[in-house]
Structure formats: structure tokens, C-alpha cells
Amino acid sequence: MSRKIVIAVTGASGAIYAEKLLSALVTLHGQWEKAAVVFSKNAVDVWEYELKKPIPQFNGIVQYNTDDFFAPFASGSAGFDTMIICPCSMGTLARIACGYSDSLITRAADVMLKERRKLILAPRETPYSLIHLQNMLTLTQAGAIICPANPSFYSMPASVDELCNTVIERILTLAGFNFEHFSWGNV
Image (tube, rainbow, N blue to C red; front, side, top):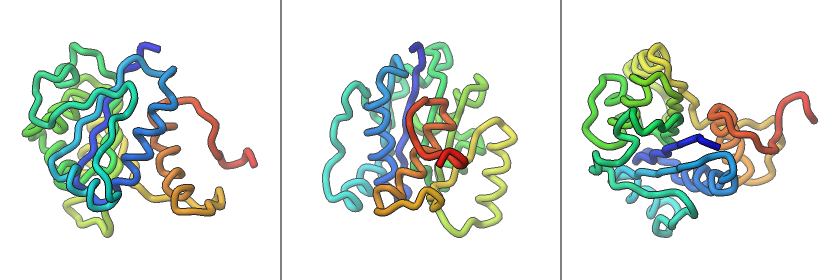
């Protein structure tokens, strides 16, 4: 249980994904030792606009300000092993791809890449421009995992919540969490 994970939420549309990810992480508390979350300034506005409520506290998950470069995961020595950015705006993705650490989110992502730790980015954008694709290629070559927030349908989701959960389950699986979920061939 020595896992340390940080979740970042940026201003891309898709606050429902962030809410579901953080809620799921709370239920998986036995699989992590420390968990942190950081919201970009735009993420707060998008959350309140899309979800029609303020950001709640998530039990056991410590929230940091995007300007707090003293947060533990701003340094590789803190030993955070996984970072998930969900949703990940194309602006954030581009800054990470260029090594431009102008916020706690981009600094923490830079730390994950330099330390060769797991960095999962869930962009929620469509269509992709050539610049987006080149930035995703750069990050993939640097060791990041690009997991677009594209829901799957083969589990026959019956609601928007279930549809969104297909994305969250995929992200959590990529992050190495063990939990019961639909998997192809186990029907």
C-alpha cells in the first residue's frame, strides 16, 4: 500500500470524469497510501458550470493549490508514483510536451516524466489538430500514456453515468488499480 498518486484536473470540458475518478479513488483507499488533487483555475470554473455545484472534499485526498510549488509531488524525492490528468486540456498537454512547468500541474507531470513514473493524460477534445497529435506523440515517446476520454459501448452502458464510468475504469486499470469492472471476454 505504499502507492502515492496525484490527480490533476484541468479546464477541459468533462468535469464529470474528474468527479467520478476522485470518487472511485476514495473507494480504492486501501490501494494507496497518499493521494492528492490539484485543480487548475479554469477547472474550478468548468466544474461549477458543468456539475452545477462547488468542488467537494474527497475523503483522504489532500487538495493543493495550482501555485503551490512546495507540494510534495513537485519533487521526485517525494516518491509519488502515478499522476493522472483528467480531463487534460490541450493547453496543459502542450505545456507538458514542451517541458514548460508554469504551474504545479505541469511541474508534477514533468517530475513524473523525468523520474520515469506513470503519467496518464485523459484529453477530452475532438477533433485533434496536427499540433495536438504531435504533442501526444512527443509525450508518448517520453513515456506518458495518452488515454482519450472516449467511452466504450461493448459493456452496454444504460446511462450517462455508466458510459462515463467506462472511461474511469480504463484509466484506473492503466494506473494499476484492482477492482471489479467490465472486461472484454469476461461476460
